[in-house]
Length: 168
Image (cartoon, rainbow, N blue to C red):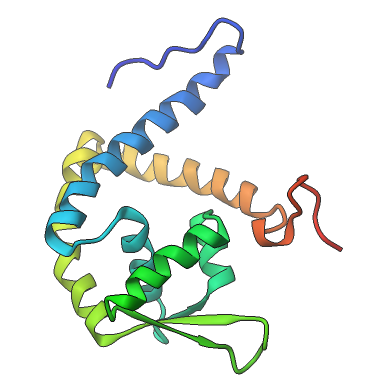
């Protein structure tokens, strides 16, 4: 990868920002075709299925999905609706909270996830993992984990108003 160019009006430490954006876009571009060709999925739809597949219950609330994906509620509603139309997930009101909607991975959705995951892993290795030595992978994972924890310690997006302050 070429060195990121930082506009002269920004401090040099913004190089980390531009590098992260570039790598993120390149990885997403690299996996998008595989997901579309092997599963008929968008990157966001794959993320939804993968998050649901992480849990033994294969279930999450729409709010938790939106916060995890850092995606707008309306955009997430659209994507989950498409997955529901395809029979890959079901939505239903939460029995614990009348305001919440649960999304559950169906057996068909789990089978699709299982089918596309090996190719996805292969592409991620090709475009990201294999570019790094094992110690670099560990260090990058540690550093990005620190940044994610710092950012996630702030109020969740679902609890913030459009102006940026937390609802109270």
